[in-house]
Image 1 (cartoon, one colour):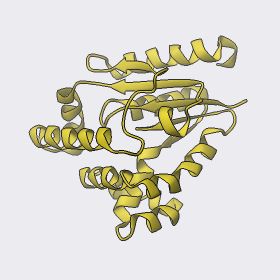
Image 2: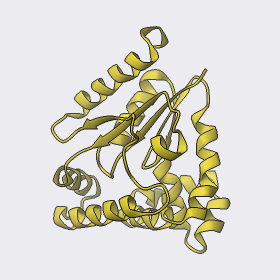
Image 3: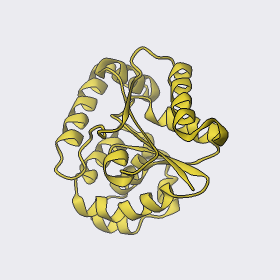
Image 4: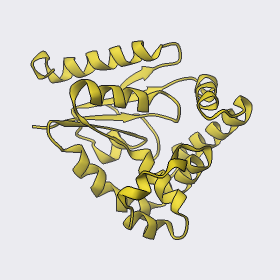
Length: 198
């Protein structure tokens, strides 16, 4: 039976780094669901048509990690029809053997509410802004403003708002190193999955 790990949290909290590390450690499939929305936003035109026609090539675009793509993703993610078009894809991905790790903003609450393990990864606004600014070579003050704008939009949207699932384990990475965050997450997977599943 496949083991699904749902990881949610705001931008630059460390959820993607943790998700990739867990997928590698347990040899699970990994999906950064934000890339789906980034690709839809980057395609331009009608967002619903873009979501329905999403291709593997769209997900391989080099500009999907830009701040502009992130803002576009947040805008199109607020459109219920876009979310609906991408839900089935994500749910199918989540139930692959031997398991899958999905990271995003509504994985534990909407996409995989029955995931075997749900994590909500967060960090202070200032730390997240410094991380993202360093990653993009951007101004930390401007990055902080953009992150807060995006957080507000993602948390306030009517469809699948950003929030922790009731049964999620919250992991605050503000003062954690990458190694510490990954080690804690691995222990949570082992505890939930059982040592025999490692």
